[in-house]
Length: 99
Image (tube, rainbow, N blue to C red; front, side, top):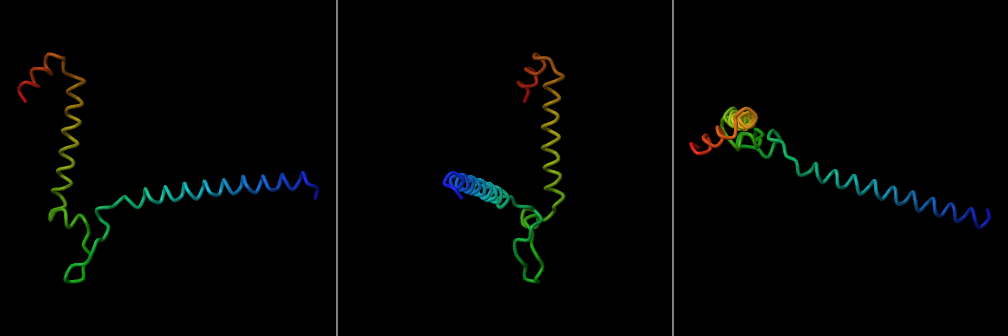
């Protein structure tokens, strides 16, 4: 091997090293983002009887009430969005004073 080809190989090795380092950093950032996500159904502990307890069990005894509350908030938000599209400015103003 001559001196020119050694330089080329060294440059190629450094480039590959940089690519690998970038990929590793991207993977670490991605995995950190996933670690911060929590599911309501993930087990967080065990009760006295040995049954698993999830966040949904702790947040509310009736999981339906949590779901219903979220649904209601989403419906209210959609309602206000529709009002903005349908009502005239004066009608919006009148409703704003009544609220």
